[in-house]
Length: 408
Image 1 (tube, rainbow, N blue to C red):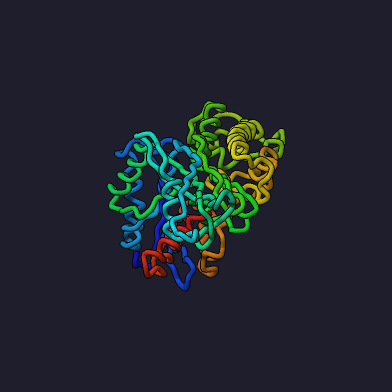
Image 2 (spheres, rainbow, N blue to C red):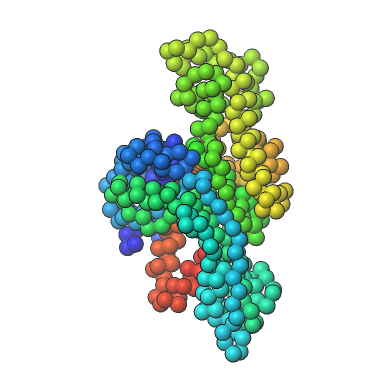
């Protein structure tokens, strides 16, 4: 990609978002933030291309109007909840007579560790080398130059339902855009928000979107695992609608205006005037009751995260705590509820400032909005990929730098 402009596209259940950024002096300048109401998307997957296309077309058209090269090299988030992950190991014999491990050995063991069998209706969307082992000794980040007879690699493989992946690609193509790369949404959000220090300490990224919640867990600088849950902030709006017997759109408005993740923080006598919200509304509704509905659904989402963290053997051991992103993370009190439910320190996502031009960030109010974390992470990934391409002058150099970057 020769242009200095990069674009990230996040096609979600409730909205389609896009960000265009420009590289200047090694830093990113956010230039354009886009958001359209989404349709034809359920649980993070496109289920109706005809319905989904108009909003995607509008966002991609705006990106193209700003930068044709960015629209022709889009970085797109994969938001479907239908993902699976597995850990795979590969083993090869060191090829040189003197037993020194070279780049070819490293390439071979990576291929061996990522040669997994998956169902015909699944597509691998992410593969990451966790560690290398030389003659049984592990926790090696780069084995090249070491000596041994046996080289092993442990990789994390993530796959998705092929039909969902193909629908995503098709929707972007129909909009006139072209995809350069795709990234699972919680991993993209991690690119934007998590620092190297947090990943070393151990941290969980929890991306609460409209129809799904994504989780990515890092420890000792490595991606330990990722998961998606088919519920998000839209489910809260539906719960309120059902609980109050009002339209979901009214439930969403109530959530945004009066919602809190901690119901006890709301006065027992506080009420909501329903007539002020929609023509058919009558009487008063307890605000605490509404917040109890919100807290219940959020507790379910946090329970999902807790169970996944336990399954990764990281319960109570993530010193970096939990970082909350996505539109659902904007509910007041959510950090406190997260601390209560997960027994970990919790904080709202803020983009890692080391990637961004400080002056341009200060004048852009959308930059710190956690619902743009995925898009920001996508453009960070684009910049990193472009930096690798510019500094690679030989196939061997390119391979070394790309494989080094794959280490979380």
